[in-house]
Amino acid sequence: MIYTTHSPFMIDPIRFERVRIVQDKSMDSDKPLPKDEDGTKVITEVLEATEDSLFPLQGALGYDICQTLFVGPNNLIVEGVSDLLILQTISALLDSVGREKLSEKWTIAPVGGFDKVPTFVALLGAQKGLKISTLIDLQKKDQQSIENLYKKKLLKKGNVLTFSDFTGTSEADIEDMFDIDFYLNLVNAEYHTELKSPIKQKMLLSKSPRIIPNLEDFFHANPTKTGAQFNHYRPARYFAENTAKLAQTIPSTTMDRFEAAFKALNALL
Image (cartoon, rainbow, N blue to C red):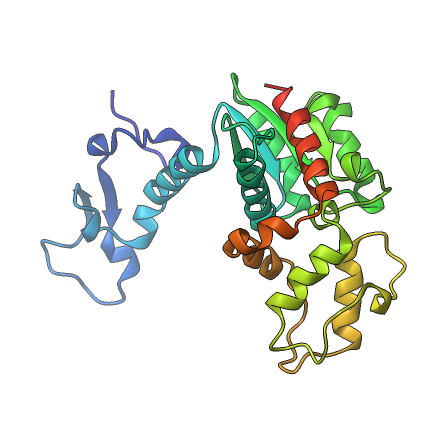
């Protein structure tokens, strides 16, 4: 059977050797082409293909890579790379002292922000045999969207976890799982060459219950030496890179909150 398509989803990424590329270079050329290049050609060498002709193959390959790298039988959806760094780091620390870590059966999938979570859940949920859970930030403006994940039967209610479930607050990001003084130490250490003086809790004047908006407001009101705004990825990276020297300074309450989250997630497996 032979068929033609522009859809990457009609291409088997493990059978690329069966694919033939059909293109007409004259459509992209303003000048007449040599006779051996003019007209519709069927080619097997991808290096000879134009960008437009390669697009379906690129789409199929990209989708397959995504499935391989970021999707497994048990998928834990988080909002961003900073969540991934923190969860992996804390999990390793808990495991090193004999406490419950996040099961290795979970594949952590950062999706690039809360607005992408429902779409990602819907796409993965359409595939049979996959278990999907979330561990995401909770803000009042996102409350309805989070509830829709289970009200619209995309996920079971018990599989929709937010960080506020473990902080006991009305709103929470992953950074709020840390004790505030410890997290400020991470920020001060990461931005030490840019801050005019170390940040202390009493200097955060925002009324938000979440630490991130407080820090964003502080950086806006107190410009750094370089003019850099607060980026929550940087303290997460610093934490991951300096785990050994920070391990003994992490408050037990912080470890307790993360362990409670891991226990709840592992119980879903």
